[in-house]
Image (cartoon, rainbow, N blue to C red):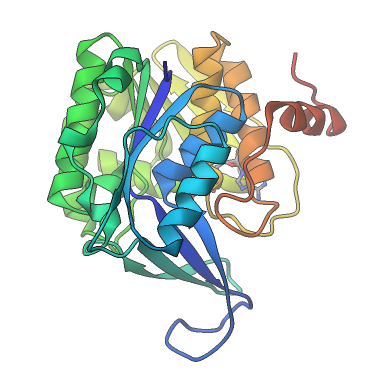
Length: 317
Ligand code: ATP
Ligand code: MG
């Protein structure tokens, strides 16, 4: 039985090998790297030892094979992952600038990834799920995928499970106003929200993180886990606020760190750990995720994360 279920876009990522080469100019690429926020979170949670299911759609092409191979190798329940004739697997092209910002081209709304639908969610996955993790990016890809995300979240919530939301705003996919709207039905039933600072401001309409988090707590969210990149994270609850200091790494590629953080935090909660302990573990997993080139290349096994935490003089206890 899968404890943690993610749903949404599975895609491959093609990355510029050098910084500051615009997407529209001839140049070198590396890839395909398996990617897609919900698929990255699934991989991270599975490698950390959780039982995980992923629901998504890929094309009947070599990029789809690349994704299926990777997710199966991680031990993920792929019974809700469809391989579809007539559509290409989703693709993201990404270029990094020296200032750390990224430029994307997405082949998504007309790709296989966008064809995810509620009917493909296997009943055994709904019955077993304790956590349904939803990404704002998935709510932005297509109507069918959005409805599938809502269906999964509602079913898991109705059975007493936990719904979590990572707003994961991708203005390339949908306007920020519209993303805020499509997040509302998930926010209505979400126990946990995993925003970055900017995403928290967008969702709550409040500029200051503290005020933004309080606004979400007032509407029924129980935990706001604010992700702050190299500054670590802050956990807001009605009982109080916990600042969780970062682990130190040399960042190679930040893509996927947020998704890995989400996964690790949910794994911690599923294990019954305290919020503070889950937060430290998630910070370590997020930091490690930035040390490898490629969105899903920085997902690690639990033993490797614990060894890293000990090396940094802040062991997991
Ligand atoms: P994205 O959506 O681009 O994956 P995000 O904004 O959701 O990113 P980040 O804040 O970038 O998420 O990263 C998630 C967590 O990973 C942070 O809260 C932090 O704990 C850890 N982390 C990320 N980058 C670093 C870094 N350079 N050094 C140390 N820890 C980091
Ligand atoms: Mg994010």
